[in-house]
Image (tube, rainbow, N blue to C red; front, side, top):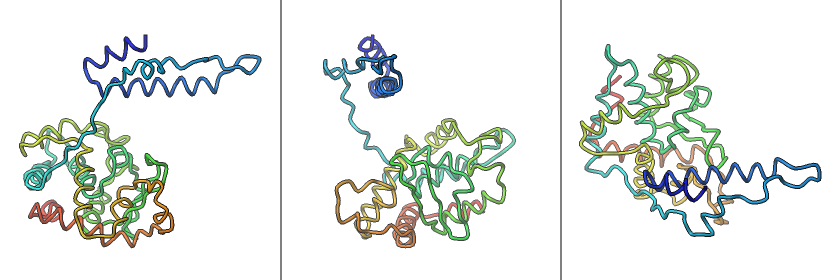
Length: 261
């Protein structure tokens, strides 16, 4: 049954088929340790998803390497800044600011979408992500570009979330409609994670301390012993963050915050 379902899902998307089976595997692993009979024996004797490994049926999916190239940044950012509210949509500027924040911080999609005002310290000019992928709290300095963007949003905050949902409750869930507008206007396709890859690529191309890019995107240092002795001080990241911001704006040639202030 697992093999059949995996193959069926793979006809639509090999990556999604693998992901679905990883979720199923995790559920069985949890159940195997959680549920026991009266003798203390697990009710789940074997994880059926193991069959995919035994038969070498997992799809080999290459990691995406797409990003927004330097010559694409100007039309992309211009298309993003053109997202303005009108009588047909009162949510465009929320998506605009969300896309800008992801590009200029390298945050993951859900980290940015779930961000609350409690995570933003405008006085200290920092933001903090608590529920991260690697379970490490992540504090970033705010460049003036991001500071004014968030300050503007704070002045018109609707609820506890920095990027509220379209109905004014919860946080943003769907950005596809406005992303399609940006793609059509800029002439280049992109995903939210492409913005993170763009940030990382720019960070690694600049003359900044070697550990700064990893700290900025909250990557684990793995077995790097030296990294373990470096204290992650948000103020030490402020200059690298500013260099990345300046570099991105140099390609663009405009200041979106000033244009939309």
